[in-house]
Length: 353
Image 1 (cartoon, one colour):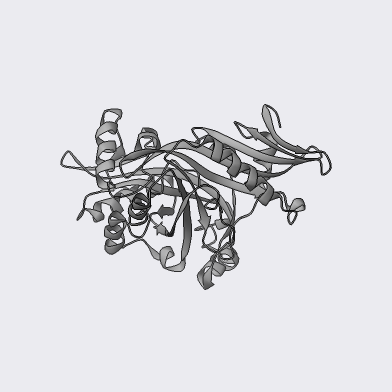
Image 2 (cartoon, rainbow, N blue to C red):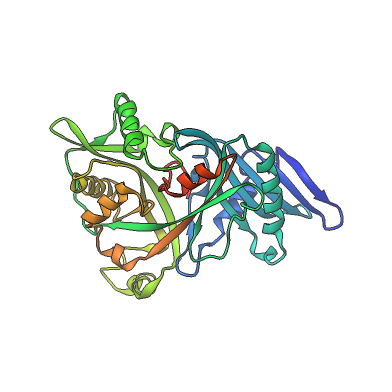
């Protein structure tokens, strides 16, 4: 791998662990052919290269065997606010092993060297975290080397409209509004951990809904492109296996070539949830899409208000997905970790998922 530093090498097995600061073409190709997910939802990610360019400070760990890429683990370094304090943070973005090399303990070997790097590099207080499909057996397993562990199950909420409607009150956020919107987000999510609106708020992706000259709702919208291999439940099996064979319906939702919006940095005042739904529907309409995804901690008061209002659409009832946030904290007291565990976690719109 070009421009990579060798962290460890074993002449006997011809295994080499390296660290690079950006993904090589070989890494991109490995990630493109990887099937992600667990026993319920399986999918391939299109446009991996563009997704990884969103990272602010990438760390690409890899194992080469006889000069061939065998396994990779990608981290993004950032800062996040926890309990009002700035934490050094590593987001564990992706871990993948070439199909031909599975079962050889490469992911475990790579994880050992990643942990050692994090132990040496962490500024305290620090946190390493990742999003793990709840149906998989994989876990970061950092806690026995770094610090206290916090785990949280987070529902994947599908927002769908087969005939989405636009709204004239929806517009891009102005550059001059970014600071006010950012302050509003910090205030709205004050009781959450892992806040990072200084870096995750992207004006070019953020849209607001205005009524009578006042912003009543806001959302960041990132286009994701998946090829779904399998979905959970009878409805999921029908969407993947049956729908493509029904004339007139197969073009309505092609999950083998699925573009959808990931909604993040949601802003809504209590009682204005209907306005947020109007905004999300308008964003689907403007992008010519039918599906959006909301990933929020179910203990978040913001999400509780949105969920209580409902009106997510038909596909949400057919899809019951969750992810698990696993976070390991270092340099915190017992009282601080107790307070952190009592708080909802923010799933950052800036994190690659």
